[in-house]
Image 1 (cartoon, one colour):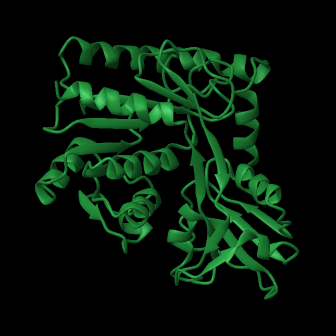
Image 2 (tube, rainbow, N blue to C red):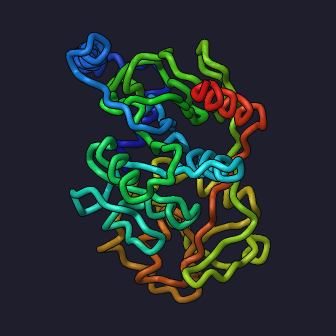
Length: 328
């Protein structure tokens, strides 16, 4: 974790470590550009599904808040009368096949984020190594689905898409270097349809909208019992986060007036199979909603705090307009 944190700090400026790694970013950039050219010229084929496809992704390594945005987009589509389905690679799962993520699926079977999306939205969710396969399987199993939302996959060019939503956290594009010298998976700016950002707006010709992330006012355990966060103030807590930016979760807990006695940061998508809870029985376990899918089987009393995102109505207006234009 220390090495990862040092690298993330290096990505925020063009200091000695970033310049030391910069030569390694050149072949990475060349391969990325070549791959995109092969798709553009038709030497590699992008295949289209028979319904509109919305990709929610990012161009930076690590977490940018894609999954909460995916949840918000799915819920908006449902409220507008669409019948959305969600596809994902299912990062971190132990399986390799194409399968449906059900509300009761484990993270080991389908990945933590697909399990969360299935449970939170009730929409059909499929995972596969190739998102195109996931989309085909979803439509075969749920033929009433009329729009697909792809959680991540901005760089998965084998799947043709109709709307691209790029999400940035408050670090933006960092130092602007490609991996491993910087956080970028591909050069920015690049053509996308909509941009959401929690920090300063990144340079882009696409419409840009501010994104705010906060914790929901209540935590929930495996039984569905809800506990107001205000009721946890002053209580001894053990906060656990296995996400790309665990310190963000801890900071948001403190902003809500909570003061965990222990803050435990673990690698993103950590599976918790070998994790040991602290023996101090006073400490209530509190975690992210994503981590709860893996903690609850062994620790059903763990309190999961959902992450709420605030997105301007203008963003959804623009998304609706884009989808409307596809049917004309």
